Structure formats: structure tokens, C-alpha cells
Image (cartoon, rainbow, N blue to C red; front, side):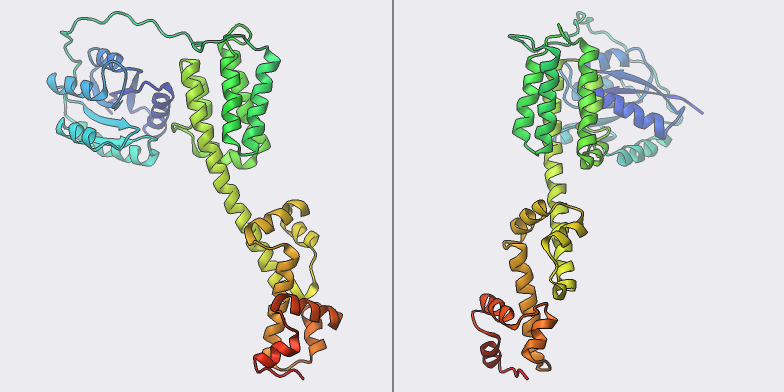
Length: 379
């Protein structure tokens, strides 16, 4: 079996790492992988490696993915090219296909789509002769890597203060307050110049607080797991992004996204809880269930349940229960088979006078007058 050379290029190191993981997992021992973090590095790799497949971001500093694709076509290289982009830009897509790109994929990359596309390309590679490009261009000057701690700091924070900033960040995410979470992250990054925490210690502290978030907010476990190998993969970003300024922007974007997902999930859960409560009331209204009974059935505190029910129903729990019982009483009155005191008992009122007052509070009239208006007979 031929082991094809694959070149992966993106200025976001976490993206190339994610692509490597996907290809290693789904095509074990099939590819020899090479990574570049810029268009200049990609072009240099193409001059050294007999690439069969190139997967590159379309927008990179220096040379873009399209520039490198033009270079590939000028050199008549036999490789296939997949372009990646975070933007659904028709003009770019049109340029890419004019240069005979194999396909164009939006980020975050859908794993199954990428695996399917690579699987379809493999038969097209058979029988081709792959060779490095000829590089006739002047060699670029070596670019010095940017320092990790690249954010100006007026006054470095102590380790305890940096840790407290991340604690505030965690508490803000718990409250689903994206602005407060952003402010806490900003305090951490603008107070860290590397004099107290070195690069590895900074990464360790950040990762520790990501796991603390998952411990305190179980719903965040699913959200973070869903984001693996995407732009919003927090742990991969912490481990792989080369500078603090890039990491700050990425984590800010990531947790604004995560807080939004958490709000959506919480809203769906709360709506489901209230629906469960209403279903329980519909089945047990005659037993006069208490707010504490229903909250216990839902495994939430009575205070939280009371607030939640009013917010989503527009009425208090007691008002809703009373309305449900009176609506059932109206149905029994229309059936005409029960006496008034029997109807009161069947809907949970042991005292007829209490039943009359409740009925009038909901309908504006007593049960007897309501029956007359609706031409119903009370025995």
C-alpha cells in the first residue's frame, strides 16, 4: 500500500493538529503528514515533499491558500487540493474552482464530510507521479517566532490574583454572564507577563479551570465535547496556540459561544421541567399537590421551581393549579351527573364554600350561575 504525503496548512495550530488526528484515526498508516502554519511554510514544504494531497486554509498571513494553489498549478504538481475557510465567500469559492481545487470546506470542519471526501480522492491518486516543486523564488528571510507573552502588561498580577481572575471567569459562566466572563479573562491575560507563571504554568492553570467548569456545570461537559476538533476546542487552543493574544481572542470567542449554547440548553431544560409539572398537575389536581411536592418530583428546589414556573407560565403555581381544578369542575358541571359538593370533592376541595370562592375567582361567577349561563344542570 502506498503511503501518500499529505500537507496540512493553517495559521491556527489547533486546526492542523485536529486534521492530523482525524486522518490518523480514519486512515491509519495511510498518510505521511506534514504541517505548516503559514503560506510561506506551505510553499517551502511543497518544494521538499512529494505531496499527494494538500489541505490548506484559504486565508493565511504572507501567502494565502489561493496563492499556494496558483503555485501548485504553475508547477504542474499532481496533488489534489482541499481548501478550508471560516467564510462562505462565493468569490473565493469561484476562484478556487477555477484553479481546479478538489473541494472547498467551511470551518469548523465536519469530520464525517472530510473523511468521505478524502476517501473519494484516494482512488484518483493511484498511478500518479508525485514530486516536489521547483523553487526558483528568492528564499524569504527567516521570521522570528513571536514571543508567547505578547500582551502589554502595566502591572503583573500575583499567582493568587491570576487564579482569582479565572475563578471569577468560572462563576460568570455559571451565571451565563458572557460579558462578566470576558472581563475576567481580560484581567487574567492582561495581568500575566510570564514573570509569575511561565508558558506551561499558564496553560496548566487555564486547563485546570476548564475542567473546573465541567465539574461545576455538568451541561458544559457535553458542550465542550461537541466542540472537539473545531474552532471552539478550548483545551486544544490552550495547548497549541503560539501566543497569548491569539489564545485570549480564541477563548473569548469560545466561551461566548459556550455560554450561548448553555443558555439554549438551559431554556430547553426549563421548558421541559415546566411541561412535566403541568402534566403532573393534570394527573394529580384532585390531590391538591403542593409546590414542594411537584418540585420534589422534578428534583429541584421549591424556590427555583416557583420562580421558573411563574417566568415560563405567566402565573404562579397556585394560580395554575386552581385554574386546572376549576376547568375540571366546569367539565363535570357540563356533564350534569354530579351534585355541587361532589364536584368540589372530585376536584380537590373538601369545603364547598372554598370551592365556590375559587370558582368565582377564576370565572367571575359562582358555579350555579355559571351552570345557568351554560345551560348545564346541577343535581
